[in-house]
Image 1: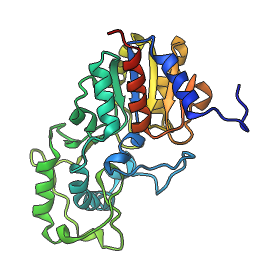
Image 2: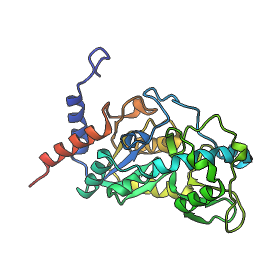
Image 3: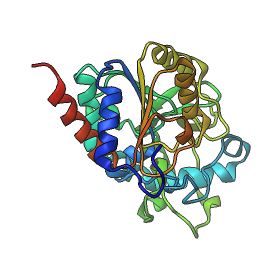
Image 4: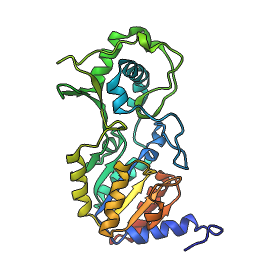
Length: 288
């Protein structure tokens, strides 16, 4: 094992990553917030895995009081246009290319931005849902976030002129205002509480979604983590499952992960640069 005084070079680690992945053609890839920062979407954690900002709202808080929902939707009203304009970056495009090359069995993402699909990936499991859809907690109807944005704007015309910096998950750092004046419309179908169709903290990932991802992982021959600290169990569970199956586990991440001790290879590098280099190396060893 290499000592901390003499860490392996990036070239050495990309060679180790290539050696681990190149003989295998049925990968599961798990992505996190680090892959979307290059698209202008901030992340929550720093390189040590600690919170950069207050933890996001929990499901219990959101459902438990109107003031929390007013604050959430007011910030979301301002932040959504920025989030909606985000486009795939080179890392998203690289993973789509790896799928096209026949390397990826599935892509599991902890992100809610839909950028993998925009980049051309098809075998995507949106583990935590999608922010471009909203859900009624009473009648279970779903409809586009764009329609809900229009409803929020109609109910709160004065709020549209407020400015705030973008924050993770489509909200904005809107502070110093009286959120009690913000009107949250009810579900237009039944009058119930509307939430984004994403998994909040304190909420379980749907069992069927996890089962589907696990079944594909069981048919995979490698697990590659890209841009995730794995600090939440919803992602870490796939590392544990891969470890139990004794398939190799690699990671590309700037900073610590909760599974560092379980990784076979870890590349400390930007996601886009590392994936581009990995593709070039794979193409160079592919048979003509």
